[in-house]
Image 1: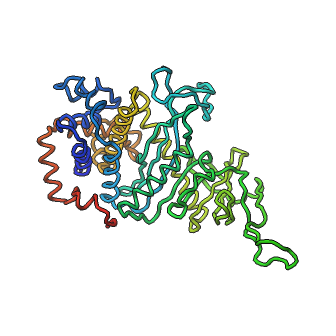
Image 2: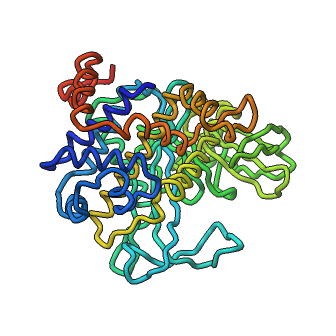
Image 3: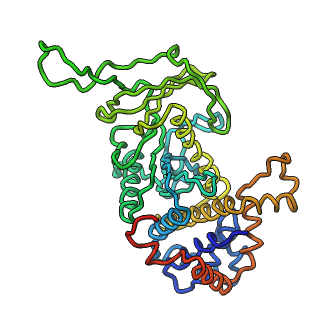
Length: 434
């Protein structure tokens, strides 16, 4: 089993956290990897029985370790370790349902746009805004969390989703420029809620493939020659484009939310008012079983209509990411009354997810062999063997469950000397990506 990359990420976390007892930090990270809920009680029972529970609470609530800097190092090492050159950034939000109104951090009442039959229209809970990156590792596309933020609502706070999403893009731009990372493609994906004029920031740095309102103003190019008798400045737009269902003559099959749908579409170049007249590729599409027309635009003019559909299809990967974080990694049960401890545990969850997700991709063949030998009832057919986070945790428990901190240190030092990967002079300087 390939554990070198896994141990290096754990080493980055342990080495970066400023705490006097490094062995406790290592055991805490391993216990988080091997548990699903992530409660302090569950972590103590899993791995850290020799420590009193107050020690762990002090580690989370009182110690001032910079979790954002650690997360930045992990993302930087992943980019350079796997030589990621094509990155798709997805921005979306989700609700975390809560019931104890008085003690929930940043809790508020929201309108539930999902309109589920078993839920009320107005729910109480937390609104999590997340930026995820879709990257290809060993030929497999995975979605990894980049930035997470619990939105604040109230009379005194003026922040909203679009402003926070814009700040996420600015932070990403600053991060990439700081370390001289220049991917070949850096595309932002979002749904129609975020596609407002303020959201399209740094459009010279990012390329956007987003859904906008179907009635948004799109225009043809203005005429090159203008009649002499007309006075005034040259027109910025040409004739406005109107599209009906009969105009969508081409059809294809699109995979959305794990299901295949027949879609009818039309594509053409035009100018978008939401981007101040910038030239874009507009794609109108309609699902075969619906009457509503959806509109997707792309600032990358090199994409064909089919490529544009395949790129926007990646946006649905953040929905499965939300499902894993909330239901399988205990994010919906995360409970702290102070903002900093809550953010620490939130990012610890995100690091755990990154470690397990990368391990499931790098050790895919080993996990399939493990399922065939020890979990044959999980095999649905001979050709489809599931590789899930739960199975990966079972396999990791055999390797990390009995590993001591001294064995971990000696193993990591051998990896550093052999592969020469984790060096501060190499990873954390402003050199360009090699």
